[in-house]
Every structure is written in C-alpha cells, then in structure tokens.
Image 1 (cartoon, rainbow, N blue to C red):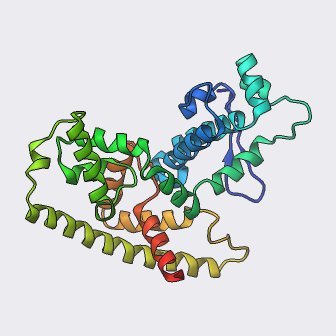
Image 2: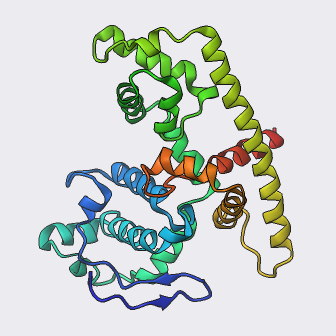
Image 3: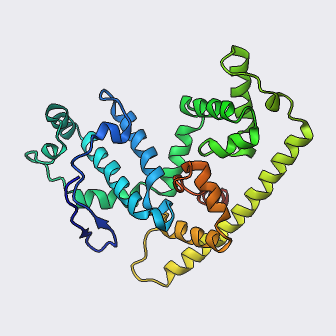
Amino acid sequence: MPKRTRKEAESEDIEVDEAPTSINPYTVLDVPKDADQDTIKKAYRKAALRTHPDKVPESEKELAHTKFQEIAFAFAILSDERRRKRYDTTGRTEESLDLEDDDFDWVDFFRTQFHEVVTVEKIQQFSNEYKGSEEERGAVLDAYKKCKGDMGKIYEIVMLSDMLEDEERFRNMIDGAIEKGSVEEYKKYAQESESARKKRMDRARREKEREAKEAEEVEQEVQEGKKQKKGKKSKHENLGDLAAMIQKRQQDRAGAFLGRLEEKYGGGVGMSEPPEEAFAANRKSKKGKK
C-alpha cells in the first residue's frame, strides 16, 4: 500500500486513507475471477460486517479501519463493470481509477460505505440470506464435527445462530448428514438426554431475555442522547452509537459478554459480527410494529 495520507471526510469524523491500490480485490473479497455481481455483493456484505470498525474493541479499531478500507476499495473495483474490466486487463487497481467519464471519488465512496453497510436493515437482510443457505448448512456440519456433536458448542461457532430458533433446523441438517454417511454420529449428540437439552435451552432463554432487556435499555439511552444533539443522525444510519454504548455496558461488567462474542465470531481476533443485542433490539422493534 502506498504511503498513507490522512484526510478528514467533510463534516464526518472519519479518517480516510489513500486508496489501497496494492490489493488484489478478488483475494480481499475471497471470490473467483468469474464471480457474478450477486456473489460479489454477498461477499462484500459478509466481509464488511465482519470487519467494520464499529464492531471491534478500541485496541483493534486501527487495524479494522485499514482492513475495512481494503474491503470497500475491492468492492468499488469489482462492483463496477468498467473498473473491473480495466483491472482484469491491467492487473493494476490504480488504472481502474483513471477512467474517462468516471467521477469516482474514493473518500466519498468510503464514507458512504462506512455508514450504510452496517444498519439494522442490512444485518437483518444478511441474516435472512444466510439462514437456510448451503453456506450455513456447511458451517453447521463443520461445527458439529469440530465439537464432536456438542450442540451447546455448535452455537458458539455458527454465525448468527440462535439456539432457541435454530435447534430443530440444525438437528434436521445433522440427522440428514448422518443418514447419508457424510458425518459421524457422535455419542455426545446421539445420547444427549431430554433433561440436559431442556437445561441447555432454558439457559439460552434466560440469556436471551436478559440481552433483549439490556438492548432495549441501551437503545433508549442512545435515542435520548440523540434528542439532545443538533443535527442528529437517522435512527437507521448506523449502529455505531448503539454498539459503542453496548460495548461500554459490557466492559463495565468485566467484558465477559464481549469476550464471548469475540470468541464466537472472531476466533480470538476481535468481535467480527454485529452484537446479538442489535438483533434483539431489531426483533423487539419489529414486534412493536405488529
């Protein structure tokens, strides 16, 4: 990456580096060179949600900021047919930024992506697309094998999983794979007693109720704080304020919950998915509209 020069985006408290032209956009988004636009968009949303700076601890924000810019820049190249074709021809992303009749502005593009990629609606959209997909099925079976059939641990690994909502779905996937001989029938899975399963589900229910209550309290605090500010942001503009408030709450409780989320979604490298509180708040707000 060329030497970075910091620019403060107009009227936004966001530092934008020089475009990371040294990247390979296909590698960054982990897509093949013949990927269609739907595949590219899905890969971008997934990568962006995992690395958005609002979703990581303070100590990792600088690294996440750099990584998120690489992801956004990769999307800027591959989502535009002309830029993509130029890159495929030259192998140089900087060439893709120098097209005739192209008014692309990297700072404006990044600023827009920073705010719009992580919204309640985008998170829910990604969840809807992921759940029930072959990608999720593969993740469930991989987790099943990794955990040797421990259902409780499977939910700690599978992205966006919810024990109360996904138990039967996941069991159907696993049972089907066992019948086909694609996975082993582990003793811990086959011999889980009804009482053990009930205790596991009850613990998950209590935790979910606690998180939903906390999410409601935090969202109320965020909205009250916005009312006191002039030029307040749109409720759905981004989850930065909500995530920051949630993070502070969790840090006040010794960071236990954030630590669990980091382990669940980031493999020990920082929280990489939107916090469950955000989903809980979203579900609660939807129920209120019915």
